[in-house]
Amino acid sequence: MTDDSERQVGELAARYMPETRARIEAAVARTGGLAPLLRYHLGWRTADGAPANGGGKALRPVLCLAACEMAGGDWRDALPAAASLELVHNFSLAHDDIQDGDETRRGRATLWRLHGVPTALTAGNAMLAAADRAMLDSPERGPKASAALAAAAELTAKRLEMIEGQYMDMAFEADERVSVAAYLDMIGRKTGALIESAMRMGALAAGADRETAIAFGRCGRRLGVAFQVRDDYLGVWGDPAATGKAVGADIRRKKKSLPAVYLFDNALPSDRAWLEETYRAGEIAGDRLEGVMALLDRLGASAYVRRVAEEQAEEAVAAVGALAIPDDAKRLLRAVARYFATRDR
Image 1 (tube, rainbow, N blue to C red):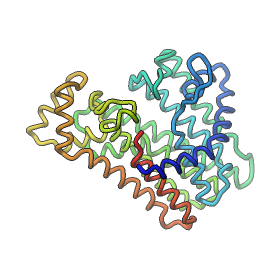
Image 2: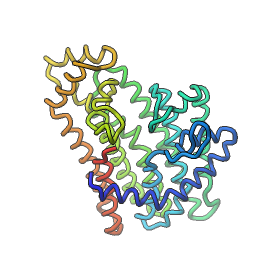
Image 3: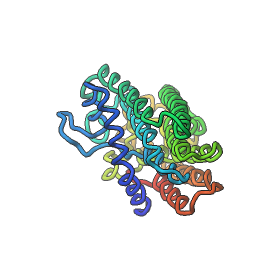
């Protein structure tokens, strides 16, 4: 990844997130006694309530607000949608951690590990309710109110698609074989749908026409797939100093990410019996891990996964190529796409 693309994404976050965070905090505060749990999950507080500087990348709200500006609007008009997006995303993470049995996130205990599954489920539900409240902080009448209603409908639809993607992901874990096409469709829903919604809502908040909003949405969908595919790459070949994970971490966990799906799709029959035996056993480690990593190398899996991420990023940029948006906006979008496909953490 070029330092320039990371810098530009960082500058967008620095510009947009203070006001977005204030909106999120207002929605969280309205959850009453559950608010401390939500602030912990968001990375804003430690387990004992002290201020913390954690939190995720906030890419969804940043993309929503950037799309609003690219489409010719005032980014502040998209703040309710941006705040709601980040809360919906964190709702999904709280529940995913439970479903996946993940005990840590961003270097500290997950909500369920700290407070138990029932409390974490309740906090996740509260996060979703807070997201709805954040979206309702929109104009009550006039053209902007109509755009806000369209944005709310868009987010609701994509939220359901994201949940469908999570269901597909869990179902895949029980299947010995998953095709590359099926996997890409799944992550297009689980990860891509919410990012599609982010950019489409941003365009709607700018007052863009239907065709323009759809084009921005297509861009977001492809960006979401590029982001997840790059995540899959980092889960196997990422630098431990940057990712905090050992090389081959997702293979150890037998996670059906793109490298593993590609491996089963392309392994020779002479290797497949060994692979199936390896994946039916417990954690993959030692000689078995080395064997799987060697087979991935022999099949060119690393180059393939990188290429898929880069192709998805190129398609994202192409989705808005014909729109009458400023050249500097298109350059910025290319930098964002490059970051999504080449980031190192």
